[in-house]
Every structure is written in structure tokens, then in C-alpha cells.
Length: 454
Ligand code: MG
Image (cartoon, rainbow, N blue to C red):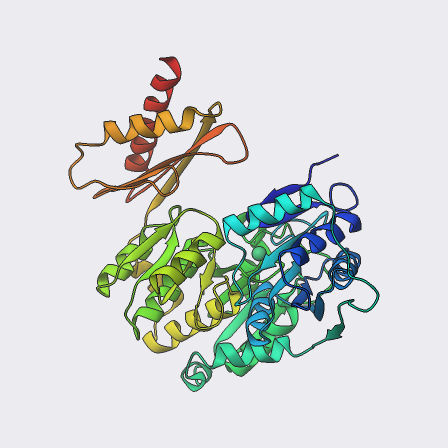
């Protein structure tokens, strides 16, 4: 039996094995315990068939703990975040396993203004769940439940309020959308309709019966690439099942990589507003080039959406996100939002009059090299220290130790960090060509091996 995965991103497990209605109810009780009696929580789920049972179980736990519930039904994670903020709720529970297959489900927990719980809040929640012993409300203090079905229309309005809709609509873009039969199925065509697009929608039924492996990466998107070519579309969009991530296919039907979603959206934002951007330490350097062209800075947090959201709030960043196709527009809510990504990419196409492949060609391209090696608990810190020493006299090196160590050099960057969940060390590098990236990885690997042998 697989284990329940409890992390800063929430809870995830195989349906009927690690994740049962009892677990969902208990986690809802633990979340309720972090709120005051009489608090109100938004409850949402993606399209997975198991979501109905887990949502009911979470709802029971919240109500029995004296917390009111606004059930907004099957919606996207960014839609749930927007509603949490709009309805002045005290938090949200979203039943979703994000990009994982149908065998999985999970729970994400959101803060009052929409972002995921901070790492500290998530750790406290997990501890409260492990401790158990929940106190239930008496007969007169039960929470009250109501439903609200306005999420999709409010989400579309909120995204359209970010831009001049006419600029995009007059271009009459041809778009192929793959919603993977997930939570983006209803709201995304509503947005594209407002933006004047001619849409071919594939995997468009909100059944949770995912038509392909759901993670929006190249090997899973051949159907979308083919449809873009066949229908001579301007762009292809792929969402993950809870529609927080977005990846792009260009007008030639080429998967262009999930890193470009953030890069292109950031270029669009910086063309009209100047300010700092927030992203994580694993995201491509493309965004640094785009920010530098606009005279702006990129601030970097440890990996994890909640960390980017926290950095964004703390430093007043005007935009940000993650290189996995997640863009975050703080004007809406500090969560990844595929609808915002779609709107900004279309606006970039409309305003520049260029094709997507032309826009991609303008951005300096980089190659990633990644590796991992065994590393017992505690040794990662020694490796990080040794790597820092080894690079200490490298010209123009910049060091960031917010999460392991990332070293930015003129030719590229390399990072090394111990995994939080496994006894392994991860080494990433990115450079203008694969040879340089590989040399950086090998240099750090050699240092790690020397530490292990000493
Ligand atoms: Mg997701």
C-alpha cells in the first residue's frame, strides 16, 4: 500500500488506500482547529470521480468543527483562491491531486487571500492532524453550509479586468485547448470566448477521466501538437487537471517547454508595468534576461508555490510564478493561474503581431542538465559548504543559499540541494549550451563524491 504524502503543498495519496474519507475528514478537522469558531471556509474540488466523496468528508469535518462552508463545487484551484479572497473567507480546502493520475487525490489548503499555506502553517497543520484529538462543536454550534456557483463567471471577469479585451479579441486567434477533462473544462472556453478566439477544445468533458497522463509535459501532449498543426492554430494551450499550470504549443505544433509560459507572460507584464518579479531557485534564467531588458530585478525563493507567494507579498513583486508553467498575478490571488497565463500570452501575440515561434526565438535559450546522487541525511550541508568554497573565487559569482546553494555565473548557474523527502542530492545546471551545463554539474558532482569519500 502506498503511503500518504504530507508536504508543504498539502496532502496526496492513492484513492481508497492511503487516502480515505476518514483522512479527508481528519485533515479538515485539523484545518478547522487552526481557525476560530464561526470561521468560513471555501470548499472546492477538481473533476476526479473520487472528489465527491472526499469533498463530502471534508465538509462533514468542517461543519462538525463549527466552521461554515461555502461549497463552490468543481472549479479550478485558482478559481477557488479567487473566491476565497472575494468572499472574505478564512481559508479554503481544495480536493485535488493536481497533475497526478486518476488513481490519486489530495487536498490543498489556502490562506484567506488565496495563496497556499506557508511552509510553517503547513507543518503546523500536519502536526495537528498527527496529534488528532479534535474537539467537535455541540448541537447549537454546528457550522452552516451554502453553495455558490459564481466562481467561473467571477474568474473570467477578474482576468478580463486585467487587460483591454478588445486588443486581443480583434485578432480572432485560432486556439486549440487541451483541458485534460479537468477543472479547466468549463471556465477556460468562457474566457477564450470573451477574448474573441476561435477554439478547438480537446479533452473538454469535466469527467476526471483523464485522456492522457495529466502532467503537461512534452511526452503527454502529442494529441495537442497534432491538433494545432491540423487546424492551423496560432497557439495550443494545455492545462493540468486543476488548471493552475499552463504550457504552450507554437503555431507549428511544437511543444516549446513549460519554462516559456512564465517567460512570455513576464515579458507581457513588463511591457506595461515595471517592478520586481518573484520566482523560485529552479526556474530558468530566461526570466532574468527579460527582467534585465526592462531594468527590473528577479527575486528567488526556495521551490514550492507557497514560498514564491510569500516572497511576492514580502517584497511587493508585481508578477511571478514558477518555471513549471505556473504564472502568478498578485492582483488576482497569489496562486498559479492558467487563465491569467492564457490572457497574457494572447495579449503578447496581439500587441507584437508576431507568431509564438518568433516570440520564443527572441528569448535567449538555455539548456538544463539535471542529476541526482545518493546522499545520507546530514551530508548535504557538508557538500553545500564544499561547493561554496570551490566556487568562492569564481569571477562574478553570485550565491543564493535560501535552499541548498545556487551559484549564478556569467555562463550559467548551478544548484545543489538535499531532498527534503529522500536521501538524495539534486544537482541542476542551466547554461547557453549543454556542454557548459554538463561541466557545471560534473564539477559539483565531483565535489560531492570527494566529500563522500573523505
Ligand atoms: Mg496543478
